[in-house]
Amino acid sequence: MHLKRYEVPKKWPIARKGSVYIARPNSNLNGGIPLLVILRDVLKIAQNKKEAKEAIHSKNILVNARHANDEKQAVLLFDTMTNIPAKKSYRLEIADNGKFDLKEINEDESRKKIAKILDKKIQKKNKMQINLSDGRNFISDMKCNVNDSILVDLKNKAAEKCVPLRENANAVVFDGKHAGKSGKIKKINAEHKTAEIDIKGKSVSVLLRQIIVTE
Image (cartoon, rainbow, N blue to C red):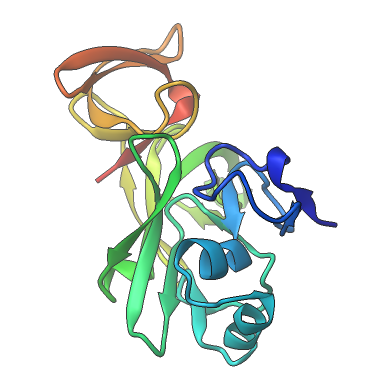
């Protein structure tokens, strides 16, 4: 099922005028962009859907260090994408204007990503299941908390390290009226579940659920 262009999330960096319909991601409409839209409309690697599908089926496109297999696959915040023939890699970030942006990165960076911890559950033998914002989960004895971040080793499919939510940590606002802004956390209010972030010298209060801690 396609998506009418006027229904496209405001975060998508595409023109509001154009064809009536545009590809709908097969999951997470508001949290990412379909691979087809990235290849055709953002990076312009493909001129049309046929060329995008051909690139994918020829195993020329990697998403999170794995071969993509569906043009409707949702590429989420901080996911990485590689165009193998061009030897170019990108990370999906969010710009100051609140819209998604593809930042060119090197090969090593394309094998890692940051994801937010949404939940933790105790499993057998006191092992902890860590559930992340991109749908991944890991069984680990790593000490971390909800709202911390995990640096994921995409190649080895492993949780590399915890990036804690704390004062002076770097954070990106990915939702709400301050989406796209980034800065250092100055204060955390656990009771109200908010953080004061210094954004270019201005203190802004943001809900913890709207930020992700980065390295």
